[in-house]
Image (cartoon, rainbow, N blue to C red; front, top):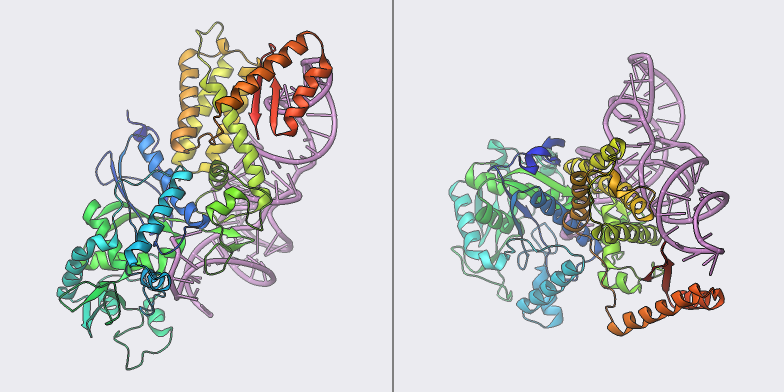
Length: 501
RNA sequence: GGUUCCGUGGCCGAGUGGCUAGGCUGAGCUCUGCAAAAGCUCCUACAGCGGUUCGAAUCCGCUCGGAACCUCCA
């Protein structure tokens, strides 16, 4: 039996607002699309949270045995400074300010984005298409929407006709918005405007003579609108209807609403079965965002140079911190919370290292109670993750498991009291969930041969001192090492381990 | 104003009708030459008011407070 049949996943579908049991379109396969970054700027921690959320989603689905095609785009054209289809293109603006070719800007920030993803151990998607690589397709779908009457041309630009669309379909289905109110709100259109309604949005924008990012089209030189790229790239690689579409909560309206309208308008089919939205990272209760100026850059976090931080934190401690809350809740970012997370993370990894070295032994006298507990814990990992990817609950289970691992280590319980298959599955589950599902790994420690050799020598000396009952010397070695951030721990049989701060 | 959501113990943060979340902090105990680590125990909460129910942090209503979206942001 497949793991995904054994532990069916339920998830909160933003389209219905309900938690639903997930069922893939093609048994055993999942198509997932996530809105990637607009590469005109450095990614901050808020962005990281979203990509982490969907990293977990894809990791867990794969862990359960699904074959996942995960598409995450790079927006490198068409994202204007505001959504009234006015203002400069973000990439073009940055290029102008920096006196660079737009594609230089794109390249630079794409590289930076990838670097950050690697640091946080966020796996790359299966396909990472870019908007500029799909201009032809975007023109094609725009033509199709024109043919179907869901779009109109105006002065070299093409706009989506929301009013017309809403006569046959439901615009606002995702965000719960009322189209009448949407049409009334906002300022009135003046004669200069190309759009018929405020809520109509651009599929294609005419390029001014000075606009450097431009492509020929049936309507003259121009560039694509922001929303259309996602419709094109998702359907091209995943089909006209696919399983999961994800993104940050702030993209729900208008971006995802427009995607639904475009896809439905073009194909007559509903483009996505399950919409998943991750919530915001906040600082003092307020959304972390570039425009509010409260955003943290990953490098400021690692180095601890941000004014709000007392010290630096490793990417894995931060990853752990984010996993302690559910993706659908806001998560507040603070120095204290990070410190607590760092300690918890270390505790979990300590047990991780211990169990990796443990081997099951034939059960001498199986204790049914212990067996039952070990079984229950292993199974609980799957149940909590299958419950809407509840990483917080899963971590709670893993902490319980780590307590049992420490019990085994310290001899509070005996390995021989647990049936071999039960322990093997326990071990496999603990390691699998930490490493593969949650993507936690050891922080890269200085793997300095010289340092390790020196420490081994000091440990040998300290062991000698202890057997000689020269406690003054053994304490000095330990205390002095502690001062420079190295903790010596004495084990049961005189063996010693160390950890570096 | 409209749409959506939240308010949990010293802090962070799960939990959506009955059963211990968990992490961090603090106190104590065990282990230890002494520490550290680890294990155990304790400090035990659901913004306020009313209602439904045998029973509510969990459902409903109101009040207060906060947030996101409706303008660019994951």
